[in-house]
Length: 355
Image (cartoon, rainbow, N blue to C red):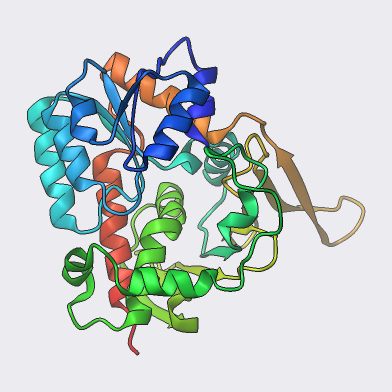
């Protein structure tokens, strides 16, 4: 939905020559639509072809596929989360190092022109004391309707009344339960397992983006989980005494996606407002707030600057970076080591809940 259109736009850098999917209907429809000839039900058969790089875009942990791809000598773009458990990340690292290939994790927000603008602006802000991450997440299906699907989804209203129950059922009985057990314990209750799944699958973007702005927290002070795991909030403490809160809430029925990273200092404030990730070329906006002394009055005034940096798509920007890293043998910004740090922090956040 997001990667294939941009790969086509970047035909000076990429040629898509093979596809793999377990669903044959989808595999044939996508292959026909994009005129991709080589199609495989088993991804290992694709790895036996002469492709230079692979994109791993499945759900859940990607450890096994990433290790197999590295051993096959392929450069790797892998969607987040790269895996679940830290032990998996270490095994991936061993395979990647042994093969000498490039691995990049798909955290597209780090390549968003607006995020990069905000990161530069943050360098001018003295001693931020608080950061706030808020994600109000509607059912993703509400943002799928306008895309071309293969095969096409029939037009009509999206039924969202039971999407929350489906998420609870899925993460409560996760197919990677042994990995979840490794992260939070075999006796972890269902709400904690659900929250962990959503941290890994969705909030990981914001965990990664916040780390890119503020660096590593010293500890996780507290985590609260409610609504059966479909809502959670964690508080991070930093070495300089500042705090950050990260809150994710599933609100399925209203088509209004809201995602904000806000950073507050005594004399300045910075907000990054991300659109739904499924809206191509929809600009992320940055709000910078500051103050100034009024020359004709013995008081100060506050001002807000709203910045639309670019309409360049973050998904496309990360693909450009991946190509550059492979061709020039550079370490990606969102590397395996960077992603492993996200996993460690998410594990600490999930473990910090006290029911």
